[in-house]
Each structure stands twice: as C-alpha cells, then as structure tokens.
Image (cartoon, rainbow, N blue to C red; front, side, top):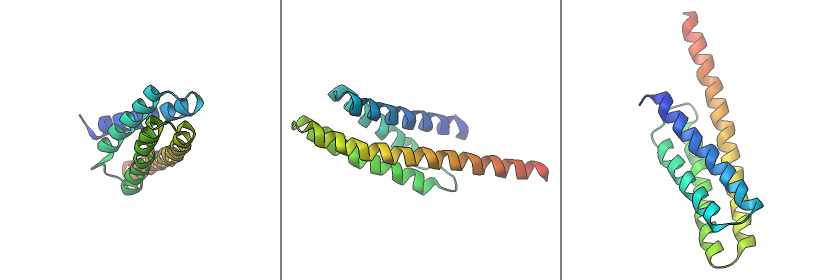
Amino acid sequence: MGKTGKKLIADFFMLMALTTSISYIVNPSIYELITAVTLNLIATVLKIGSKGILNIEYLATSLVADFHLIPALIIDQMGDVQESISLVWGAVVANIVSIVIMIIESIFRALIEEEEEEY
C-alpha cells in the first residue's frame, strides 16, 4: 500500500472517530464511546511514522484525543456520564484541529507537487 493509501485510511479513521464522538455527545451510549476510542486509537497508530510538514502536530492532536477518550470511557463506566461527555468534547476539539491540520497538509502537498511540475 502506498503513502496515499495509508494517509487515506488514517484520515478515514480520524473522521470516523470525530463523528462517533459527536454521536456519543448527542446520545450517550457506551457502545458509541467504545467505538470512538477504538477508531481514534487506530487513527493514532496509523499516524505514527507519517511524513509531512505538520506530522508531529498531526500526531499530537490524535494523542490529545486519546487522552480525553480513554478517561471518558472509564468515567462513563463509573456512572458519571456528564463528566464523560465533557471529556469527549475535548476529544472532538482535538480531532477538529487534526482535520484542519490534515487539510493544511493536503494544500501544502498540492502546492509542492504543482511547483515540481513547473520545473
């Protein structure tokens, strides 16, 4: 699988983690939270070793989301759903920042490729 395929899969999992996290906020279900945690962890693993101008920031945002979602799962199981939702909001913000970085990285990559074609 090429570099583009790996990026596509990582981006897919990041978007799925974001939308599943939002789904949990709207309708708190332990299954949605488990799914969001799983999807975000997969996205984080796929981002490790990615190459790009903003790859460190891209990975950092994913780790921040992990460090919000995992405690949210534990707190939800302890019975404090409102606190869990608050933590999931933090993960949502981190994932939105990650998506913004993903878009910026794509624009940089397109500009670099366009410049290379000119020469």
